[in-house]
Image (spheres, rainbow, N blue to C red):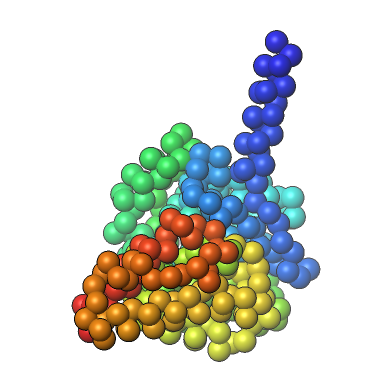
Length: 303
């Protein structure tokens, strides 16, 4: 009987550890909540992602609401260890599930929900897909999730002033998704990059599947020369690290595939590109070959 009790305690502790979001303090009132770099799962509530938290005099600005109602609740619990101020604004940086499917939870708390116009359209277009896929990946951890689309939208740029804090929101093109944005906080030189930047984990080319546009968007984001980058996945970093993990990888793939196309090669050759210099990124084995195929498909069409 004692063995059973010990086993159950261990299992509970493991589940709590797996669900935890690591808090990274950037400055006095700016934080990143860093999730796992593995796949969405019942224990992480779909939150295999990084989220930004800005505590202002008027309340909290949350960057990305999580992948589920329960995932949003977990995010809120972590925020409550940092401040008792209310969540005033939620900004969805893109159309992937972990960026917005927690909107319902925070809207019920009275938060404004903001995204780019293209992200809102992407949310509407792919909501059923996300719910079906997440149901398969996280099971009962999807319970209570109700897709609520962003209410306030902007086309290319939006200035926000919240509790004495200035934020600049930019949509300059497709990256990981068609509506991805980056958010710059000039006072702290912090860039909330969403899925424009992947750290520690290998990026996936889809769903926008336009590597050149992603490279261009990254370049525009980098032109601000931020001191700190809060990525969509992985830990907070400097610009050099973000460039190595994201933009350099995209350029590497495009260069390799250009040579294959110039030699009348095919997708099979693309899938065999040696990408081992990026093997340090989580998910490398599962996604590297697919990325090469997706880039090849797009470049061949445009060739």
